[in-house]
Amino acid sequence: MKTISYLALALMLFGSNISKAQNQYTTNAETTLELESMMDSGNALNVRYFYYPNLQAYFDRQTSTYLYSRNGQDWIESSKLPNALRGYSVANNKRVPLTDYAGDSPYELVKEHMKQYPANYSSRRQPKNDKEKPTDMVAMK
Image (cartoon, rainbow, N blue to C red):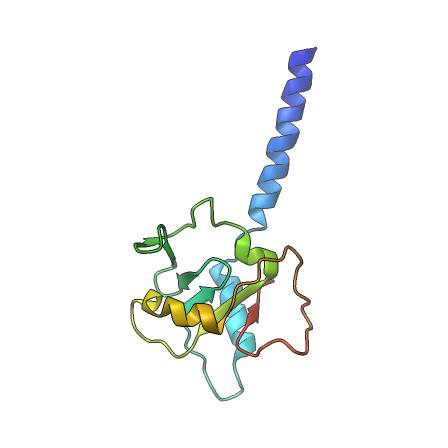
């Protein structure tokens, strides 16, 4: 009887972790829709990189990879974020499109980006209809 109870408990825990993991990622289709909503009627917005202030990491739309620092010096390019970084940017709904950068190494400007877009580590979600939010910040859905 104990075995069945432990098995049932393990299945419930496993199921709850799967449902949480499915909500942590933003797809490229969602990013495209987000960019289309940001466009003016005549101006096409050409954004290659998004900066995540809470992670001090970047997402490259061209290669669909993340750029993040492992030890503060070396930058890693990967299709997935490491477990230690997952979820932080989702918690406050912020990422910043870098419209003024055209190179291949946005992390060279990470100190400027950290000053310009400070991290918000609060666990509270930001309101979606905030009238005072900066226009260059994009809320994730």
